[in-house]
Length: 305
Image (tube, rainbow, N blue to C red; front, side, top):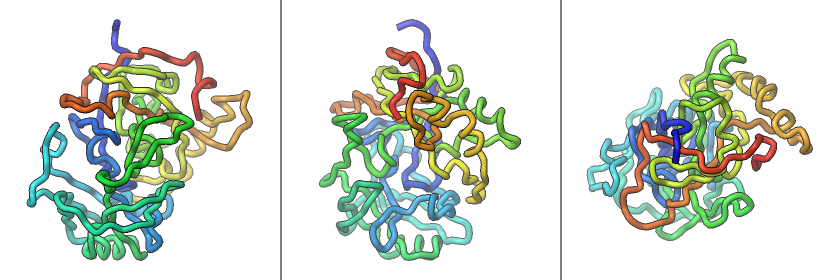
């Protein structure tokens, strides 16, 4: 297979969509992405998702899972909790075991379906914190599926991610962007699942097929960025950067000059895992795993957006 093109530097799981992530040394691969990733969602009174786009205070919500939750095959007990903290709030503990009441009309972008309500205490906690009526729901994987966009990845599913099971970015890309900024920003602005190191800046744009450990990942679509990268994950306050720098370095006009510009900027590669739908054990990605590029595009102009 030759020499590795990069290595996994960090792995991040985001149990609650748009809240803080958890850095882990390893993560089991499930049919919907890394286990526990975007399994919970905060919604408004109409069932529509809250994200940092409209509720930037979510950036300050810390989540914690039992350490053993990231071991393959672990199952929660009656004393296993998702622990949630935020400034000025009491600690909220949400049981991992058990099923809440089924609620309909939960929506993420163009998808709508049912989910499991996590109860009155969680609803009141988030309503008080955000300052608007809110409920916390959990993806009901036993009875609901959410397919990825079939224009880019047919036959794959996800939970409450924006669209795809995995997001990969490189340290080299972040370093190149930071050279344009007066104040460098950390990778948490871009909320990847997999951060890699050892490759050239933005080389992940070209990765059509890679192997991590023994698993095959396909790069399916460059990640168009919204305003969230401009929100400090330490304060919840938005600024003009890195949006302006991304316009210079990573706009569709720059990357794909032969296409009509849509005003988008890109950072990171959305991915699916070929092995995610297989049964069996042993599907774990670890920090330090080598990455081998099997197929690559010749330029970012060929990349799907």
